Image 1 (cartoon, rainbow, N blue to C red):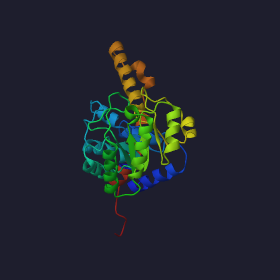
Image 2: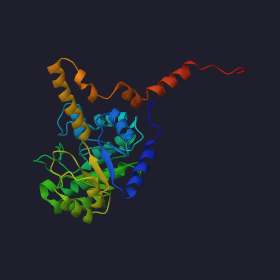
Image 3: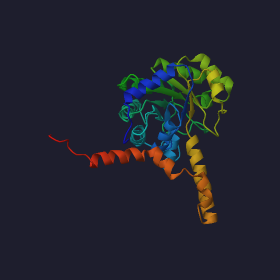
Image 4: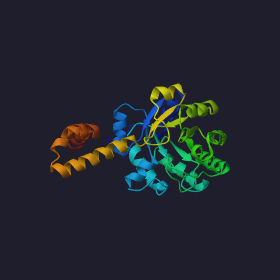
Length: 301
C-alpha cells in the first residue's frame, strides 16, 4: 500500500540473481505505473520502461526529444508501486559522457534496477527505423566507462545497446559489443538482429547476459521464448506490446462510441470496476484509514 515493500537494493540483487540462474527472463514494457503493477500481478519477474513508450505517452516520436529528468520522474512513479526490478531505456545517455554519468545516478535515485545506453548519435531514432547513425566505437566506450564510474550501487545493471547491425553489419556490431564489455558493460542489447542465425552468432561471440528485443513490426523476427532460451539468451524484451494493445483497444472503443452513441457493447471488453479496485488495493487503503481514525490510546497510558 502507498509504495513498494522492497528496497531498490533488494530488487537489484534479485535481478542479478535471476540473470545468473540461466533461465530466460521475460520482461514486458509498462506503459504507466498501473500497468507495471499489473505486470507484477500477472506473475512476471521484471518490468521495463521503453523510451519509445515514454515519448509516445507525451505525444512525441522516439527521436531523442525526451530528457533524462522526464524519464527519471516516470521511473520514480513506476518503482514506487511495484516490487519488481525495473529496467529503463536511457537512450544515448542524453549527451556527452558526463551526461551519461549523471543519467546513471538519476536512475539509481529513481529506484531502478538498471538501464541501457546505446551507441547511436544523439539525438537518436527508433532502433527499428532506417537512417540510424552510430558514434565511433571509442566514443561509446567513453559513455560506458563514464556510466561505470558514476555507478554507486555495484548491483545496478549497466547494459550497452549497439545499433550497429543495421549500419555497419553484424561483425562490426559484435566487435562493438566486445569493446563495450571490456569497458565495463554488464550485459549487451544487440538491436535489430535479423534472424536466428544472427542471434546465435552474437551468443557465440559474447559471454555476458544478452537481451533479445521482440518488438512488433520491426526488423527482427518474433522468436518465441523456447527458441530464445535454446539460443542462450537471458532476457526477452517486449517493450511496446502493452502500449500497442492499449491504443488499439482505445481506438476501437472510440469508433464504437462514436458510431453507437453508447459504450454498452464495449462493457465485456473492459476491466471491471472491482478488478481495478483490487489492483489498486482499495481494501487495504480502507482498512488502514479506518485503523488510523478509530485509534484510541489504551487505558492507563
